[in-house]
Amino acid sequence: MTDKLSTYRGKRDPSRTPEPVPADGPLPQGNDDTFVIQEHHARRLHWDVRLERDGVLVSWAVPKGLPLDPKTNHLAVHTEDHPIEYATFSGEIPKGEYGGGKMVLWDRGHYELEKWSDREVKVVFHGARAQGRYVFFQTRGRDWMVHRMDPPPDPDWRPVPVGLRPMLPVRGELPPPGERKSWAYEMAWGGLRALVAVEGGRARVTDARGEDVSAAYPELHGLGPALGSRVALLDGELIALDRGGRPDPRLLRRRSPRDGAPERRAVAEVPVSYLAYDLLHVAGRDTTGLPYEDRRELLEGLGVGGERWDVAPSLGGAEEALAASRDLGLEGVVAKRLDSPYEPGRRSPHWRLVENRETRQVVIGGWVPDGSGERVRALLVGSPDEGGLRYAGPVRSGLAADGPELVRRLRRLSRKTSPFTDEVPVRGDVHWVRPTLAGEIASTANGTLSWRGFT
Image (cartoon, rainbow, N blue to C red; front, side, top):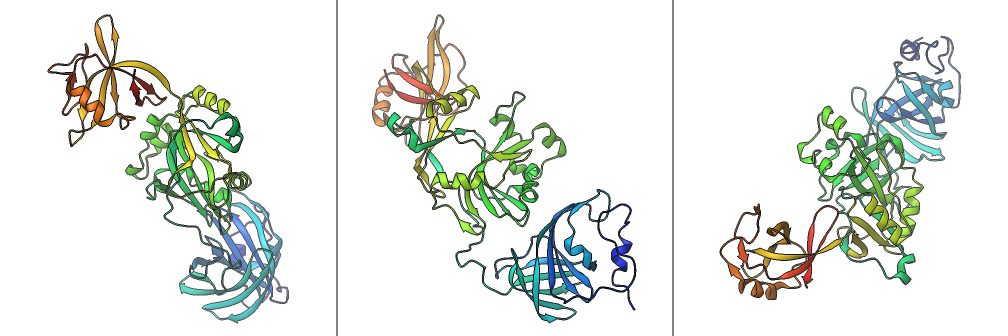
């Protein structure tokens, strides 16, 4: 008689692994109706599906777990038969041993058999987590596929959405004092916006344009295995920290996703982290219609926390949050209405970017027109000192309000040479003006200058 467990025994040393390794002999006789699914954190996370059959557990390694969507098939690799005793095994297989890693009992129960042949196995699972009709069918060699034959277990179940774009804030001020308790406040991290879809123990990272940038950020590859069988779509930011532990956008630019997979040296020199601050989908449920405070509660209960990923703090005090953002050298805070839904791809007034601004008086020394010549693309401003007008930089935002009137006033002050005492590193069609127009600008933590109006 063929020893069905010879391959199993040949791959294991009972003195080095806690796995059950029964001696050669007659196999136990059961009812051929027990199944077990084990979450196996080996070199790559997968789920081992085992069906009792003729005294052994016939086994498949399923990298993404059993599918819930009948429109999607998952790979299932046929592995060696396991002993019946394995149906209760959980524990740590030592590193270096075959299948080394943590084994977690994910589900067990009984199954009904509908068909069993060398190339096709149809069963109905009756477990706490695995339920419904499935078919395992061979494709080639050890490779099989597993297909769900029933509809999704929940009629409201939905797959993780693809192609969503992040919700964006408008620029604004803090809510009035009497309304501030109706808002939450998060840091404006100045990072790279990213949605992370976690499913089947894998994490897929997409940028704000919907492009897959997973290869560019290998630090996040462990997020999938960390969440295991949990399914979610996270919204957040990728950040890089300087030596003082503060987010630094300049460092992050050294890890451009356009370069594809980075070299090990780049990852070591500029590691990135992911801060999640919203949850758009979880366990087959679309959460975008829920209020912000409900989505945050679900996010914080998901267990997102690791060396390179975490949940970003949400604060309740407006002034305290703004002060904290200044201490960190950040742009400001994002105020979010507690009762607001998530609006994918929309710049919504329910989210406000409140910047840390320093205002100062400047004098206009030149301007750059737009393509039509009828509007200002940039103002060139400076600050008077003992030697004359010292160049402060270009102002490109906040100009729309003064629009045509600003152009008229500047043209009346035209001159041929620069009024600045130092070099102005601006290319293009620059129009110089007599330095008699004064105004106020605001500068943010990232150095952006914004026009606030004439003084």
